[in-house]
Image 1 (spheres, rainbow, N blue to C red):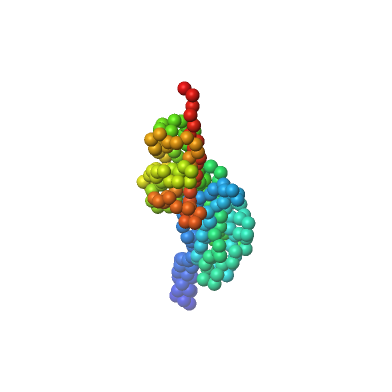
Image 2: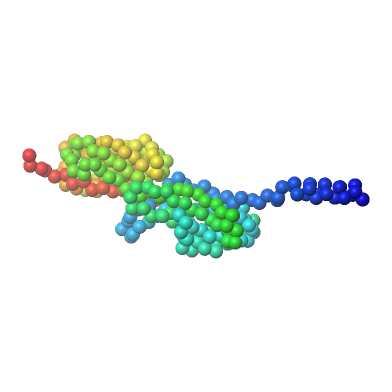
Length: 229
């Protein structure tokens, strides 16, 4: 009897020592480092994020928040039979008017707050600035830009009266969040004609219609005029 009791106690202690069953940890497909936003003629626009997750409890529901705030339409998202979440459309990144700022996307399983996953990225405002804003056409000024996130160089196409006059490479490759900073002659053309010039910044070596080509671009206007000495 004693031997059976000891054996039973040993089995009970062994059962307590076994680890608990492992639970899958939810995963979120990595986001891009930066998402571009822009103030356009039709209003603020933001690049969309593809939110894809896995390893949640099958057939459960999750809530989507950005920076801790509920995202419109992001409640009660249905998890599939294998624990996956694939939203039917992209989620717009938070809009920023200038510069860049980080944001965090979080998915949390309803009724199981320990089952959560987050990812961080940045929103960056598309734009180009010139400093100083007024200078002689041949003077060197500083061009700075953000939002040119495609792989490859950044170009400036100089146009007057709708015709391309010159293309200049502004950067070999963008830095963080599609940025660049360089000093160049304001208009790299000898004795430029008076009047209005348009400079189109993009990542196409050849001048193209950016709307038709579907590329990111910024246009700046420069007016050349005579100034009495």
